[in-house]
Image (cartoon, rainbow, N blue to C red; front, side):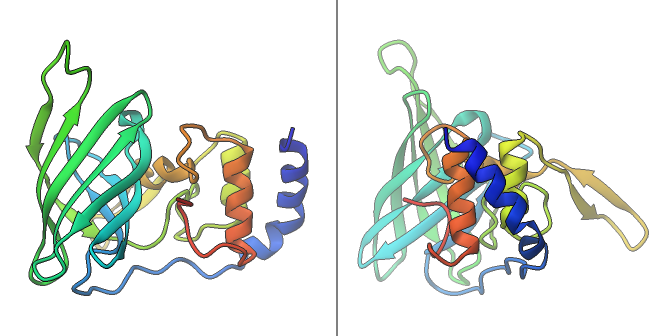
Length: 213
């Protein structure tokens, strides 16, 4: 129902969107809050993690391809920056992640547990792999380091572009676009016109960030 109106809004906004400033990487700090890329499940591609901290309370969002998306809740130790978060993912799966922020504030270290149906299968566990602080690029569908009306258009048309990765001074390769995992910006399990509308609201300054919790 909303789709024709949003497509019209995107067409009107494309010129402005093309000139938007790209999202920049978050500065390194000693706070767990912010955007992260997290490798788990021995995957070649990272999952997207966003965390907000209010005292010792943590909220946030998780986006991880076929594993599912969902809002996060948890706690952190204000002195040691240890943390524990969990989310109920798309498909009625549960993910719990426990760990600590490294001393230099650049990495998360810890373990994860993925529950399926405990009556039939035991939980799957493992150590967190590599983690990297990232910029606010949830739903960067065309991998141009910006999130704007162009990405809303790509989302509605079920399209995306690969990212260019510099291997050396002379060699650049195309890799999977990790940021499309965050196209479900309201974490309701669907990529649809509601997500596109939120992207347009972000570009217009009506909301501060994605995902919307």
